[in-house]
Picture 1 (cartoon, helix red, strand yellow):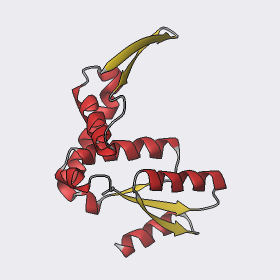
Picture 2 (cartoon, helix red, strand yellow):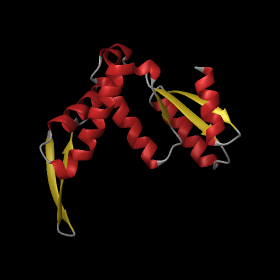
Picture 3 (spheres, rainbow, N blue to C red):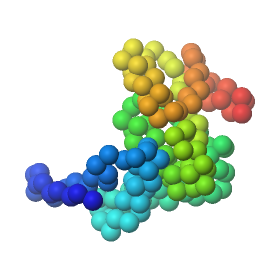
Picture 4 (cartoon, rainbow, N blue to C red):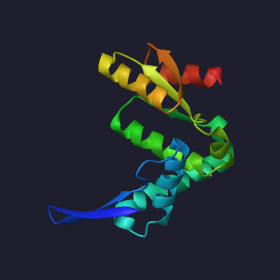
Length: 150
């Protein structure tokens, strides 16, 4: 992989490009998973590796059909989406799914800016997500409806 280094405020950051142009999104997620799991730099990568280990355990225990990701289009949700997709890429489900996403996503629609709604729709199309939407009510009510729906 291509690498580069840059300094900022005394901290050193390593830039790694996994693929100049990944042949598929599935390959990019598999490469992301490999980069996270192989890195020896705990300070920079430790939290991601720990997250991957937790996700791997959840996938082994329940499988992707029993897991769901609350996705509201925020920065944290986007990072978690990619971590979940990278974890799934290392499973038989991920290899079978190809371009389709086997990650269930749920979006509790409240008073949301139109730009956020557009971003969520673009993410859904770009990553072949199946986002289940629950309108109105609060998060607690939405979660209850989601669980009851199965």
